[in-house]
Amino acid sequence: MNIKLDQKSSGGRTLVNLLGIPSIILMVFLGGIPFLVFVTVVSLLSLREFFLLGSHKRICPQFIIGYIVAVIIILQFYFGPSHPFTIFRHGEILLLVTPVIILFELFRGKTNSFSNILFTLGGILYIPLLLGSLVALRNIDPIAPKMGMKLTLCLFLGVWICDSAAYIVGRYWGKRKILENVSPRKTIAGGVAGLISTFVFFMILMEAGILFSKYATASFNFIDFIVFSIVIGIFGQAGDFAESLIKRDVGVKDTSSILAGHGGILDRFDSIIISSPLIFLYIKYFIY
Image (cartoon, rainbow, N blue to C red; front, side, top):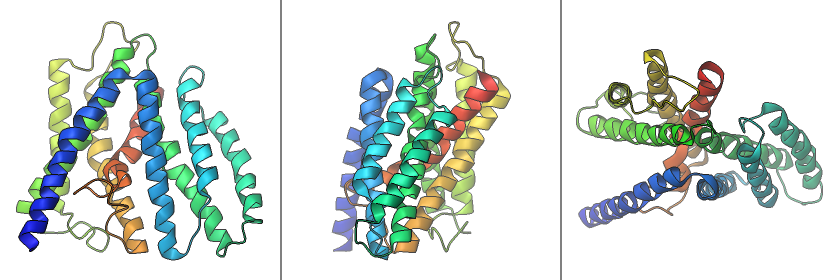
């Protein structure tokens, strides 16, 4: 029985990979409105999964307000002047929505009001504000739009390579755990393999000149590729642990079962949520 279940899960996982990975690559390649819609849908589904986790702690977040604010934040990334990520304007959005959430809670008649408010704000900060940076990264160079496409694609590929290497090495050769109380299957060997594989991936890109363009207004060097490797190989994996910590706190294995063999949307984008804003901010302030 267990063998059949494992085979079914493995088959579903393979199918999701075969359909999902090319679809994401296509959205990154298209950019513009299609990519904006893609990030918005992923953010809303991830936010929904995050809010539903609160039910395990008898927390009732404000779903509708959360969705509305998520869309506004992502649109700000897309339509903002110059580089879409503008702290001041996003700060204004948060300044406006925080009292609205607090006041709205007065009329909901729900228990755990304080937790409801914090969980709603936490979901907004954690998902659309961080994940929306993908839109900003994709549009980072209006003079050379292909540069944004390359950077975004390399981010996804780097995370996938890191996760795959960490999973394979950890499963077959990993013994010592990293944070067993948070994620029992994650091993030191797997984590190191993920970091090394990311480093090798970016070194190959550097040698091949993939992230260079005569039209771009920025140039990359060896240090930049080291930073990219660290962000994905360390902070990206830390994002996975952070999400595992939240799930363990509420007592669930996956955020949902929407993706066969993969869990929920949030489970698949946990590393991207952390690594995307870090890479975008580094490129914006230290390269461009």
